[in-house]
Length: 159
Image: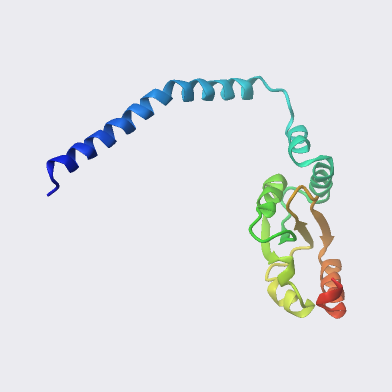
């Protein structure tokens, strides 16, 4: 059991936290209302917003891939940028509702034979997603495998 000074300090801490939350609530509600009002009044299209955030090249690449892949057709997704950077998530989002099968980071795909074994689904196209606004690239499956084999023959220093 805690002593009286300890319980007083606990009660004071809880009281200060409640005061802080109540003092910030009106401003937070006002800001949230402003954001909702702005979202309702905007006339910017999805493509225009994507171009503003990620750049024209990225937006053109996404539009080109969307035109090449019918909405129900799946694709293999490869992470060409830094692992964990999130580029694959945004590309997958921008290409929805096309289903994706994730192959992993490009740097881990070092052999054409291993890559063929790893491709458990029979999809015709491969999308390589990058980070930092670099546009994604669309490959036919056989050309992507050829590129991996070419890179493996060159060796790690020539990539």
